[in-house]
Image 1 (cartoon, rainbow, N blue to C red):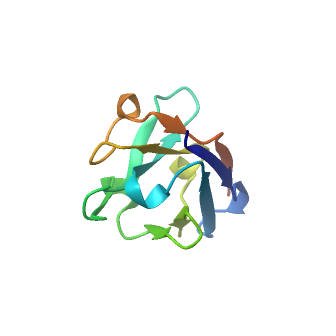
Image 2 (image 1 turned 120 degrees about the vertical axis):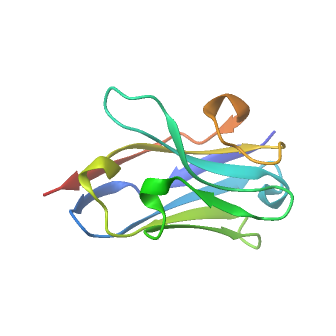
Length: 123
């Protein structure tokens, strides 16, 4: 069974960068669609970036386009989310998720979840 372990959250200043990592065991993450989700205080968990299991096509939520970059490293069996120019609305809990479906656009689709990382953006 696929297991996902996240790392890289923390406190950053407004406009700074942070990279989240999602390392897999128990399966080849390259065969899975992977999504990154963010859950702000009092908000629902929403998809902000993802990569398809079929053709590695990337997709991003509009508010993070041009600032966030998802990458996959098959040799390390991991996926990363580089977050640049973080804004106040970027604060929250971040989760990576994996599934055998083609892509993960909603939390309900994902079967496997990382433990979550907290990101705090300070002004």
